[in-house]
Each structure stands twice: as structure tokens, then as C-alpha cells.
Image 1 (cartoon, helix red, strand yellow):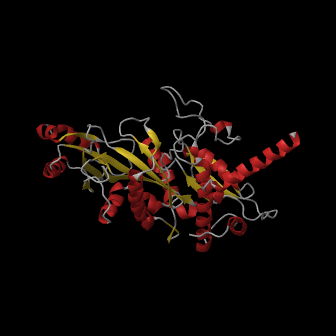
Image 2: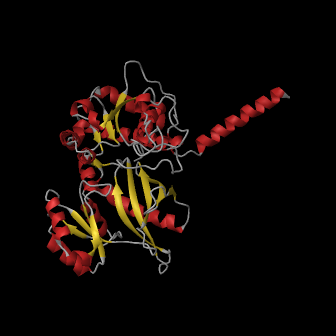
Image 3: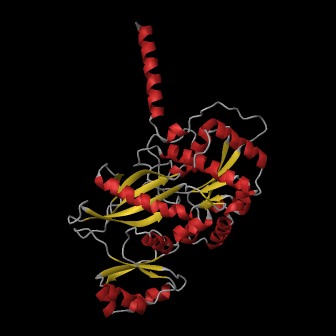
Length: 423
């Protein structure tokens, strides 16, 4: 009887494992179709991971058992915390997952933003930047480092840095993607675009002509986390223009600004967002984020609102695809977050007014704690897919690449294991 029970349990465990693999989505894509060995002497494809998102943890208990001690974020609670949500972050976890999925193909070079240089990236076959671009260096006041990173990013085809420069600039210049989306009929907040420096008197006249009772102004380039914002009641600035004039004086180096009306919910609070995540070219999940409660995150429940926001995000991603290229050829982006603003409105059939508020590149919060996947598994597979696509285009272009023919052979082995790339 005991022996029979053991056999039954063993069989059940095997069936359970099979079921998990079959239904695991991203994980299923990583299963080796053929056991193709790597011949001795080929070495490995070296992938750089620029990390530093100390506020984007993985789900509890899903971290890699060999997570490097020196990369753990141990100071993650209290007012003086240098991180949030635990020791194990999604960016490092993704790099570890790449190596676990194909350990005889890939090796990982982890680097922080301060480690980035053309010389360092030249040693890698490809580098994914998850948190360490020029905008973050500038925000941290590290101007010499920012200049080095700009050099790396602009020369992306020779440094083999992802994201690609022109696409990256399109996302960072918010007015560029906003104007493109508006032209495509995608709903957005009404916006006055200031493209050649801030003129307080001229902007206030435009605000008055628009009839906005309250408004905000924010830089349209190289600004995040609410940096450089001024807002208030229109009449207050009509009565006293000095704060607006001071804003003009303080921002002479900034040329691009967005001027928008307040968009509030019926209760007077700032609108909420449903953030839609596209990974390796496909919509994967959406997370609700409260407009005022910074702990208010959860996976958006199924229903009409989720679907409407998803479809609007998909329309927006079509605009992203028009500018995402590698070596001049279309390529899926590694990750985009498309934030859909949501305002309750009983006059509409959906019950909500929805609009695109922002497009973010891969250097953003992935909110893996709340998504229906293990984020490192999802992103690890996506990085392998992206590496295959980008490196093949790099080889086709004839770019200088360390151990070029060995890389070509390793990519061929991946094709035999995983099947040919379908897009």
C-alpha cells in the first residue's frame, strides 16, 4: 500500500508540474524544444544588465536562490530606506533568469549606472538598460556621468545598447509622441504645447483663452517624478504674475513644456490610471494605480473597463511600433508601459472617460508584485527574444562584434532549441 501511495504521489506531482508548465505563458516559451548541445570553445553571449530600480521588487518567495549578496537592497524600510519592497529587485532578477533559462548560452554582466562607459559596454554583445539612462544621471546631478551615458546611448548600434536612441528620444520628448497620437485620433488630455522656451505672459493668455479654471505646467523633456511642475488657479496668476515669471527665469535651459487643465474625479481627487504593459511586442497585463493613494496598486479586474483601456493601449502601441527600430528595421520594444487615465463619468456608456496619459520605456516600474506573472520569468524570456532579434540584425548589418562567428553559431543553436523567430 505504501509503495502504491508513493507511486501515485509521484505521478500526481509529475502531472502537476506538466500542467504548470503548459499554462505558464512566458515560462512555456523558454522550454527547450530540442536538446542541442553547445560545442566546446564557443563561449557565451555576454549580456549587460544596467540595474538600479530599488523600488520594483519581485513577488515574495520568487527570487533566485543565488541572488548576489552585493546586489541585495537591505535598507528597504523606514524613512531613511534606500529601497522599497524587499531585498530582491526585478531588474537584477531578470538578468539572473536569462542565465538560468539558457545557462550554456548566456552570461550576465551586472552594472550600476555609475559603471556605464563605452569601454564596459564594448565587452558585451548586447546591453539592456533597465535603470541608468542619461535622464536619471541628470536627475541625480551626475552631469559628467550623464555625458558619458549620452555618448553610449547615441552610439547605440556600436555600443549595442537597448533601448535604441531615436525611439528613446521619441518617448522622452513627450510632445513628440503626444502629437503623433493626437494625429492618430487617440484621446489625450487637452494640451498647449510650448516648443521653444517658456514665456509666462504668452502662456497665461493661451490658458485664459482655453477657459481653464485650474492648470499645471510641466517640462516635456527629461523630467519625471513631478520635477519642474507649477500649478494652480488661473485667476491667481492673473492677479499676480510674479510666480509665473519666476518659473520662466528658473527654466531658461528647458525648451519644451506641456500646459494642461486639471483633470479631476467627481470627488475632487486626481484621476486614477490603469497601466498597460507590453512585453516583447505583446500586451501582457494591466495594473490599477490610484491617483492619490501611493499604496493603491492591484491587477485591474476583468471587465469592460479593463478591456476598453487595453484596446486604447493597443492602439497607442501601434504608434510606438512606427518608431521602434534596430539597424533601420522594425523591432518589437522590450517593454512599454502605457498609462490610461480613468475618470468616472456616468454620462458615458462605459461609465468612465479614458485617455492616454503617458508612454514609458523599459526604464520604469514594472509593478511585478501585482502582475499575474513572475516578472523575472516574463522579462527573462523577453530579453532572450530581444537578444536574438537585435543580434541577428547587428550581424546582418556587418557591425563589429566580439567573437562574431561564435555569436552567430550560438544564435543558431537557440533557433534549433526554441524554434525560429516568428516576428
